[in-house]
Length: 199
Image (tube, rainbow, N blue to C red):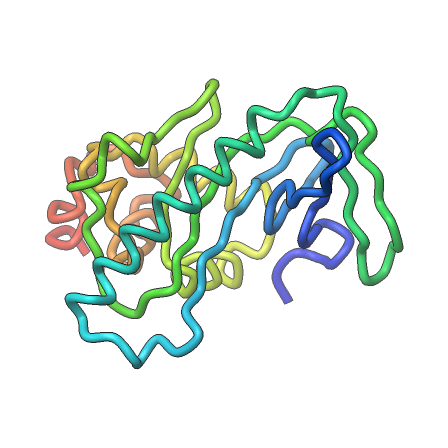
């Protein structure tokens, strides 16, 4: 089982004024720093055509980014908490811990190019790298790497790729294989197509 439950916080909550709000779908926390995740899923991924799925994914990626931006811009003195299945209520009285990476994960079983929405999908915000992945690809990374630091290292290394390649979801296998074959590095990888050729 990748990670251990004590590192994974689901459905973080906070209060803006008197109104309760979600402060993130998932927080993967290790030694005081974490990966913050916003997730968008379909009720039935087989219902849409490939074209409609791509349009849905682009829309949901933008929604996920807006939520992530809101999470990252809340005042640091605003408490956040999570009702954890094992640990009970876990408070973060000073707001979110240090976030080393922000993730928007969208449920698709095909490759979707998000580049047309590049202006609405930044790759960095307040010095926090932002990545866009399919749910399936992220789960495969979690199972393969198994620890939060290794996932963080992969995501950080991945950001050395061209920006156009960072806005593609549902096609992570090629990059993952290149990373493993290249000794845990994207050095020398010029593009997603270059990685595919090398693999």
